[in-house]
Image 1: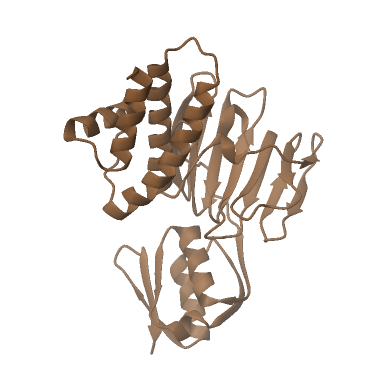
Image 2: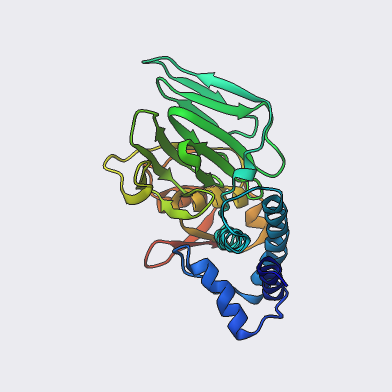
Length: 318
């Protein structure tokens, strides 16, 4: 049996839970050699991810078999294993970065001149304000599984509509990806600049590439990626930015979900009837989540209970 065949068999045994403790440790060392700690997974999640890993692994191995490379087969398998396991670990946190997600398709282009700004609003409600001397590539229609655009030059402010099952992805230079479910943030990626920056205004985003996740950012944080040194540094944004939160006859269940992403909080609606109530209002992130929920509760004659750390809110009837 060749080394490549041995590697395949070992990975198969690991994924199908037939590997010995020593074999498990060997596979996990492949992953940790990439510089990231191997995650401890719950049984259900590990089983679900295993099926995805196996599919990706087979695809990558088939590609490697038809390539001519100066590296030995064992090195190729080791590299593929580490990359696939890393992608699976990122998927646990809700973030997945893969070049395969940006597929070849007919894209539209939006460009601006020096001193010019343009705004585009997509059918699902997401808004992008393109800054001066910038270029954005986007599909005529988003796919059912994801929403992906490419900021090939310049800067843009993104105010993304929340969709639980269809994340929004922004690709920039150096194959850097920013992935969100629903939030607002700003990206600067100029060809002549050494750094790419992502600053979060509301919600939470993950920034990384096809090899690793550099960090998950929350409101008020930013990340600067050095294109030359290939390093990322997270800090707090010096200037606060605020955006409007508009609700047009929106069910409180969806309102709560959007507020959770905007403020990184937890909101519990303690009855199905509360979830179906409607909200017609425009708020601003300058307001605290407690203030917004107080207004909503007063309109619907509800009560609000707040945790000591102001991170968890319970909405219930009087």
